[in-house]
Image (cartoon, rainbow, N blue to C red; front, side, top):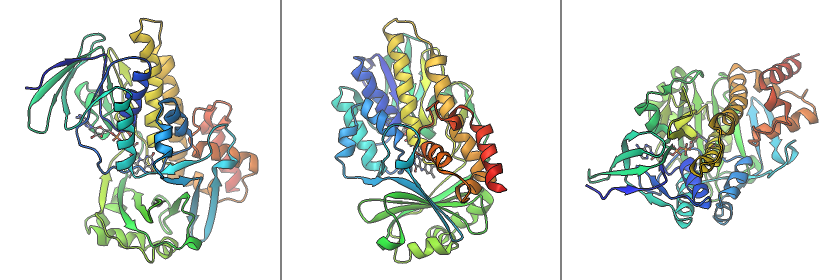
Length: 410
Ligand code: FAD
């Protein structure tokens, strides 16, 4: 048995959502205990950040440490399909705010954020797997076990669940709900890329649409080290047969696209192939008595626009702003301060994700018809500014995007 503790807020998971929440709560003067199942550094996928998230990193006091890490700078997203090549440069975006981000090794990035939380005064416990929770404001309890099977408890006023795919509270409280998006499969690795500068812009994420299947796409995310993350996503029936063959299968599906195969012709596939299937998830409610769910533990859509880490950190920022008021016995409104803005950003990305897979948004991306003004607004969304209500594609994403698709398809 581990000595039991009492704190203000217990955070489940030390990924981007949990670490940012811990940093912000410490700035507000609250005591925080973070319980993390694994030990850091550890491999996680999700390496392409969006410029918007630099605002959250700054607010949480982590930007300096991230800037100092020497991660590959990222200035845009490029798309290719059967000879079409389109560049979205974040500097052209409509929204104010940073126009660059980074390609990060998540093992290093998550470790940096966790260290920021520790430096800010949070207690971060690794090898601590949360197994049970009782939620009631001012009287919450979280039970966990360590690597040796010893059990411990943390009493807190509030629980923030940032457990990602662990989805601890959604499962325990039965608020887990399937995503409205079709299930997808992903298959990926890190390579020693051997990429020649004339073949690929390292400071932009490259999305390649499969030459035959428009609902299958590849990412190429290049790091400063000369290595890249490469992966493929699509319907399970098109990806799973390759997963069965391990790395040989991954190489085979990558070589189905001649342009991507050309860029990676000198690459050494020298590490492990990973897969995550049916990764999308949702909840029936994002918060309740004594708890809120953040990041992937709440709703996760799809990796196509690299929105996951940005949404995860934004959810932590929104939630801790309301929680600070609640802990200080000030008037607060979880619905207005957390749920509504969080859903607005998610809805914006969801509209673009849905129309990517139906092909309509790909017609926009690969169309010469989009004018500069429209491109600026699209660049804003792809840069993560999904909460900028001056952008009509945020305020009314479905109608605006549908109209744009019709114009580009004519
Ligand atoms: P996580 O990063 O998953 O962190 C959750 C933490 O909780 C983990 O450290 C875990 O160990 C811990 N935990 C779990 N269970 C427990 C428990 N019981 N007790 C204690 N701790 C627990 N996003 C991007 O922004 N850019 C990308 O390029 C990108 N690419 C992706 C590619 C693929 C194929 C997939 C599937 C996702 C991708 N994502 C990407 C999404 C991104 O990985 C996630 O959105 C992001 O990691 C979510 O952060 P988080 O803090 O919510 O959760």
